[in-house]
Length: 416
Image (tube, rainbow, N blue to C red):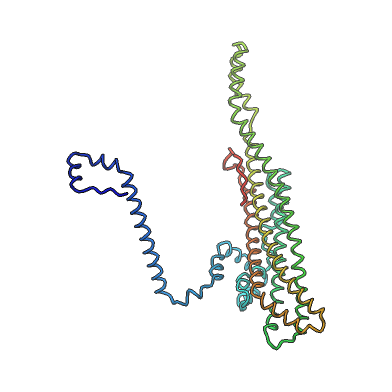
């Protein structure tokens, strides 16, 4: 596809002044070859940089370091954000027993659960970490100028988030008790000289600790259904407020034209001796319609309802994730417990049954610990999400009376 031009032809074209015409005529060919050469050059440069970086990394580290990379530790390092540090600082400050903090920080971590050793918030009075608390919320709603219907919706939002916070706190306590009981049983089925009959009896007894954990699934669904119902109410009220605001904005923009049309009509129909009245008519008519105060109020109300709706939606999604994780753990526990009850009913086969139960526990030990860790992480993130959403709404309520933008335009519904 290339075009070869000899030096003789170039000299002839240069002498006659046709080089610009030649370049313009075949500009697409020059552009094609330029792009092709640039792409090859950039690709070659990227390959050289990658090879040099790989060589530098391999030369500065041992070959075994690549195999010893702990993905969970890297994830934990990324997990320790500013919100994590702030929340953990509040946990330490709200701890009523300083000895509990020192003992928990000096105690050795659980070998089977690295994440549970890093996330210690549930051990230190997590129920005191709700920010802001209900008493503060009540005082804020009392002093703020919020409408009756909006006040009811916002009060219900704070109540639902507080209930979800307390439920997550109870789940963390159940996880702690469950993990401690499970750790006490684990060395026995790892030992080769364990008492088979005593082992299956102990597991049957420990499995009763799962009962409050299993029953928490229904409570999660109950709170989540309440959040979804509250979300519908918040969105409905927000949409109605935005519709009123849009109507007022339309009336505000059209009021000038309306006053001008009325004034013109009056000038044509009424005698000239009332001309002074006609000049004052626009001012009088405009003074009767003052939408600025109502528009500001509706703008602030819509913004508050929007923040509450977004926080409710995020909370419902978090509760849905937690419910799925709890259901997954319950299914695995029910499987092992059903196996234990089966071998208990066999009577003479209890010795073999204990071996089967111990083998099944060994098989699902790692996955069970990972599932508990994942559930604990999501509960911890739910704590921070609830507090962040509540603080954003409180900030919106306590905002100044002058909104940032009076010309409010309804936005599309976005679920964050």
